[in-house]
Image 1: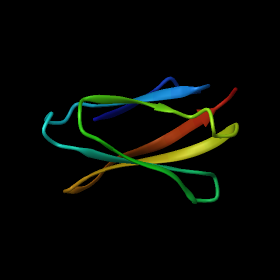
Image 2: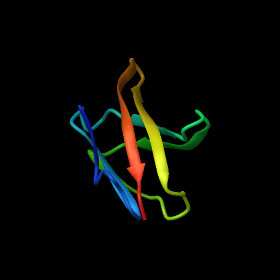
Image 3: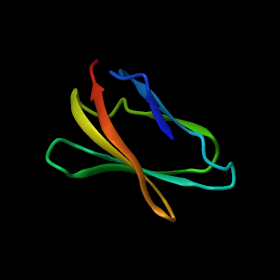
Length: 79
């Protein structure tokens, strides 16, 4: 289970997962044209990600583990 908050986001968002603490999650953020904008491995239960360098718009995210895709969704950035 993956949670991305706040949504819409302004300067940052936090990714939280409820997987085993020893299991990492690869979090990938894409822009509206499908270009990969951000790729982070989240090793603990949550991580805050700074998005001050991103423009307003709709972004799509995907979360993967070593076993494959576990979740995806949409993130709105509104500053």
